[in-house]
Length: 290
Image (cartoon, helix red, strand yellow):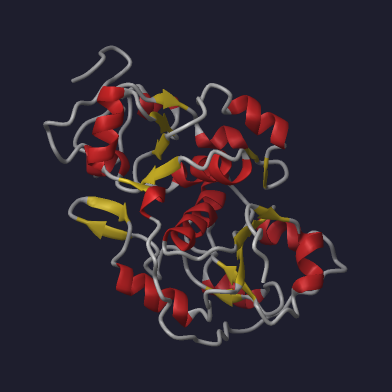
């Protein structure tokens, strides 16, 4: 067990730990990256278990908002079924192909931290980085987790924001709202299908999550580049949001786990939840609120 097992882990650091009894490697490949169980069975990190980020219920549709936190009893059963126990170190392995793929890993990471799990890291570069070195072993075949009891959830509520908290932040400026979407969404030229209106939460600043990812390497950008990208986000309370709490998880991960702002929360409902109530204001490029 490690009390400081968090953030990113490199393939070089993971390789000698694969035999550790308290290590659980989660391969999360799904339709997000164009893979899934078949891709996992064709080749994965030795000992890794598979959980499909999309199909296994890491997010739930509540009303018309498709990316909400699932019921806690579902998460307890899901995490336990993967063999994760409270003192395990968990390594989350995305495909390593895109920013949205990394965001899936960040959302799983956030979910584990929210339910009280203290030690998880994302494999920097994902399976792409692991398999780039032919000296590293790759295993084929079906997933074979060692199921544990349902995880004993202890919710860390400070990590999650709601529409009410976002509304207070929008009006008071006591927390910085950070919009992870591209400019077309932020400015109101495009919207998610489930959102009733286009635009952003008034007072939010735009930080496109894709800017934090290096497509050429499949990894997040260097620490200095990330610091520069988020330099306009003040220290202190911040709320990361997007359309469904997916891409915002990448910004949350960078701000919280890499840049050390421990007052960052994720609004899992994001704009698809925010816009369901017509009383909540929405701003666009051409208006402050509509």
